Image 1: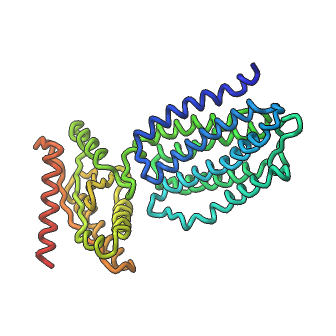
Image 2 (image 1 turned 90 degrees about the vertical axis):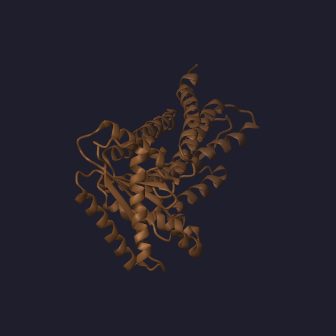
Length: 377
């Protein structure tokens, strides 16, 4: 009966994890690398729950054939432990910096602790470094038991530092959700390390991941996987609700289209074209206010949503975007310039335009701008 009481928390967490994983796998874009890091955490944590539960069930069993099985299970626990912490670090990095600043080749240094840990795990059964199983089938901690724990804390602490140092770039909801995520698992891990036999780490990680997802799901579900801009569907839903609310504060949308983008793709390849899209969104995001946003409407077309009461405010934002893009072209070493065409108009609540009518109207203004630039060339 004591065994059931010991593992019941893990069993509940396993069931909840499986149900939740089925749900999120249908609702978020797994191709988006940030979402993939989150899903990897969830999968790895579920494996930890299963492995940890099995170790409790098998502990004390003196069957000879079970010894290699138990060694494999315990080894997997020690390998996966810092892997989850690393995935959390990757998720935080991607959430804060986006795909633009995340490059696998620049993360080699951060993989070294994981490689060291795997080496220790592989030789541990021969030298009793992390753990060993005595002749009575009882599990014992080894002299290097705390190594995977310390490596995990390195990733967790670095993630905390990244989150705190980037608080100016995150909204309040994001900041506190990311900051508080690691608190409960960290406290739980300390209790489990100090009080031998207590099982609270992985169940606490499960529920922390679920809570984190519930706070951040809108951004995880409605963000373009390449550029970090809003998706078309999210934008249309928001615009429709904003028109229906008839808020006192005015707003405008602005269509942005890249000039000669196909030539960049054809000449330099689609990877270079992707970099252009990412760079454009990054440049524009630097100019937009916190409550404004950019949407990738399709291909190389973007729509800005601007909280503005006057046309002059909108013109100033567009002017700053063109200026920032010109500065980028002057300082960039790439063999092409990034150029835009744009169209914008304040929404007039008295006209009662539908979403489609409003978008088509601004879209036509953008194409007039594009046509005039072609004539000038």
